[in-house]
Length: 94
Image (cartoon, rainbow, N blue to C red; front, top):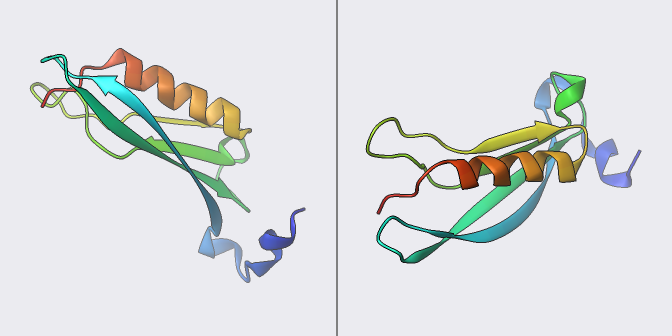
């Protein structure tokens, strides 16, 4: 257990450490837009398989059904990789 995890007083607090990443995504018009990804590392996740949860900071697929790419997993790499796959799957429309 890492030192920071001892700061959580109650399991209901869902205390988490944040990790930040960014990537560039081409829009339908050809421009590149920066997409931020925030990964939460929970001390006591609601589901043990979701210790890490990643989410993009902007909606994709805006013209039909807006969707915020996300991913989860037992490792930071697993959650981040899943989120990156979802970013690749959907169009980013300006």
